[in-house]
Length: 308
Image (tube, rainbow, N blue to C red):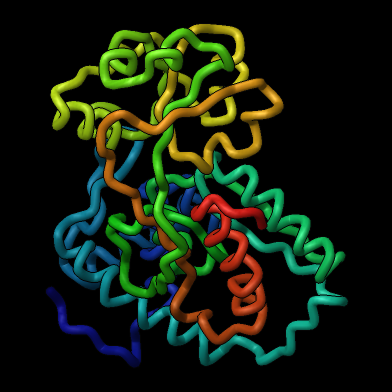
C-alpha cells in the first residue's frame, strides 16, 4: 500500500468509500451522493491507487469488498462519525414546534407498537412525523451512519462499530387458528404436527426458531403456504383450517377482529430477545433521546404483552 500523506488526501473520498460499501453498486452510490456515476467511478479509482487495493470487485449486480476494504471501513466509520459530531451545529430540539421526520425500522409484526408510538408522538409533538420501513441487510450500517434514527432488531444480530443498543424484551411464541378449530379441542403435540400450517417467509425458513425447536422435540411442521408479511396471516387463518406458530406480538391486534383463538405451543421454544439500536455518534442528540424515551415504554410493554 502507498504511504498516505494526509496533507494531500481528500477526506471526501472516505465519504464516497463508505457509501459504496453500503450500496455495493456505483450507480446507487452515485444517486445517494447526488453525484454522477462517472464521478463516483473516478473516486473509486483514486482510492484504489492510493491504497493499492481493488477494494470492491464486480460480482453480478453488486460489488464484493476485499478483506482490506472490510477492515478499512471498520476503522474509517468511527472517524467519519467523529468529524460529523464536531461539525454538526448545536441546536435545541423543541418537540412542540419541530417538523422533524424520524426514520424508524422494525419488522412488520410490530404494527401495534408503531400505531401506539405514532399516537404518542401525535400527542406530544403534532408537527413531528415518523416513517416506518422494514428491515434490510444494511439496516445496522444505516443506523450507524445516521440514515436511520432508531431500529428494533434481534439481539443476536451482528452489529457494526458505532451502534448503541438497549434491550426491549423477548418474543414469546403461541399457536393461532380460527375460533372453533378442531385442533384446539384436543390440543397437544400430535394436533400441532397433524394440521397444516401457514408460515411467514423470513430469511432462512429452515433455520427458524419454530423449526429448530420442533426438530428438537422430534416433531415436523407441515407447511401448506408461506406469506411475505405477518399482516397477511390473520385473514387467511380466519377462512381456513390452517394453524400458525408466531410471536404473540404479531397477532395482538387481530385476534378479536378476525375471530381467532390461540394456544400455548405444545413444546418448548426459546424466547427471541430484541434490542432497540441507534447511532452511538448521535446518542447525546436531544431529538434521539426524546424518541428513545417514548419508544422504550411502548416497546417493552408490547413485548411483554401489556397494554401501551
